[in-house]
Length: 403
Ligand SMILES: *Cc1c(COP(=O)(O)O)cnc(C)c1O
Image (cartoon, rainbow, N blue to C red; front, side):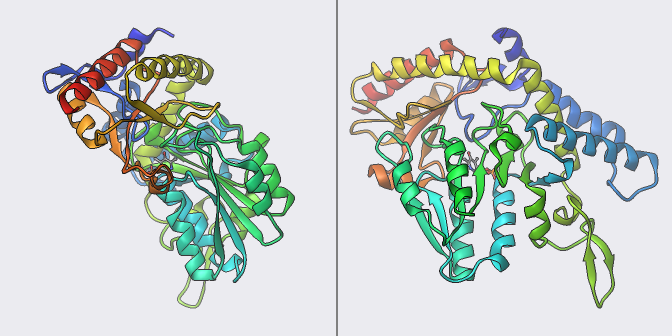
């Protein structure tokens, strides 16, 4: 990987913050955007901005073709059997809410839903709301202090009452890569459906959704070099056929009268209204970009980065890392004894270093460790060891100033 050439693709990486070169280490919140993706957005608005799927005119057809080609790129990237199993959404949060809403009529009182202890709020709250609507019960798959799921406890929780299981592929707060193959097969053995939140995994590894045999998988484009406000829900055809539509409106109907409306076929049944057309197309360009570098090359490079960063950070006295799973990627959450994470983040910002501080939309994890939050440095393939050195010096300086 020619890292200097790659960095030139990202215009934002050459800007300064507070008079210092930007060191962007908040990739788990959103990734930066390469020029190729920016160009794809510009060329849409310059050349063929039009609404899709309904115009006979040329622009509309060009926009429709580009949008559907993007859907096929996504299908191919995640090895999905059928392109209509790819539903465009505004991102992971929307995708999860779509599924949670759809299950309202499929659950009854006493049914059980299992959710892991290390979920993002977007993979907790929609299920709590679903339980309120249906009388189903939410149960939590516990984790240990390394930030690994307790798989024996998980298997003990599974029963004939278990209807659904939810887990993230990679934890955005700890970096843990969860054993989703095992989770999926154990859940299927009791007849439960599985939704895997892939928002944090997709930027770092390629999931083969047919091989995983997962029922639902969610992705946000903005975490993988695409624009904000677009993502996908993958759903197995049999499930998507079973679930009722989420939103009503244009695009999602076959026929409308005031007596009765019939719904369009997949994927349109779940794509009411004018979507983020440009965003969908640019998401396809982002996948092209990542695949040109190669997801395996990206994963290897990032593994080296995180090992280096872990080693360097642990050399700082009083620094503790949360999330030490054997299998982890791209995220280092840490605190320094006696110092509030927010104060460290503020000093790092003065030095041009962007990290996240707080609970990272995963408050139950912070409660588990009995801490208010962490400082989170999260890495991408365009980060360098030199940037990690700047981070380490910054943390040392913050410690000095705040101790
Ligand atoms: C970012 C993230 C989400 C939420 O994604 P949105 O794009 O904000 O909808 C959900 N789960 C995980 C693991 C994430 O990292």
